[in-house]
Length: 410
Image (tube, rainbow, N blue to C red; front, side, top):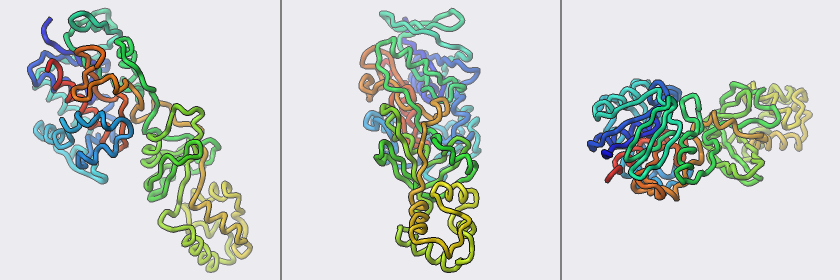
């Protein structure tokens, strides 16, 4: 059998792996179950495709939530600067936005996909679209890959880049986990990561559509604080979302069931409790004859006032001159520690990325090759690694894909 490689999965990791292998003169075939490659890329960054992050490579690993040390070889072998240079050389111009997020200048994810497709064509990668892999067998001199139509192909090496279980409409349905387990590998999880949270007692839907900026946000699991940050939060029909919520979800221990989660919002993070109390006393002194609910417009967005007062058990119709010190302290505490009991995360199908995957203990970090099966490689979200938002997860996909493709038959 010739030294050929089959890459299963045409996402960011799979396309980069196929490109890297073919660039070395290896006969490479990319197999994708969808009608086009890069389907998940199309929806990333709200359709703009946050390709990577412009941070220093040494800072990159601070944004990796799971198994950052495992990724060091891959990220240093193909860092963000190398990715941006490669895209620029192939005609995709990029720009850097808030938080170091890198986007195509056109703000169109389609342009990223087209650039990757051009790279594959130029490298001579054979692509098989609308082709679903149903089974994989290990043979003495390679692998036999079986397709839904009953046909099969053989290869000397195999790269699995099938993604996780998030966004199944893009093709990420967990097939790769099944193939890897059959070939002797262990699975961690999977569980949702970068996922919105569901409200347990129905307060959030009353604030649906309200976005809070520069609020303090904390997440507790089993009464222990697991995340704290300042940023932006969105109330939805089911609970809470937004950047701080998605980042917080990465820190949830899904092995602990029930999850026992509580979110806490600090509406006034710039003020200490003492300074906030002084602010309240000034507001009360200046508005003694007004009702509490009307004074609250100076403290909270209109849409949040009624739910806030209900949760803090304060009477919004009460005149300010009748508010006791105890009630004022309750108000201040509520503004600094507004608590929302969380029922669960949203389903894994709605997660931006999947936590869990193939155990990194069974993968050589210097090559992405299996420690169990020779000439079997892994790339991207199928591996038990994930990171925060901001382009880090796509960079992981590109870096692990590039390293896997560069290591085949090396």
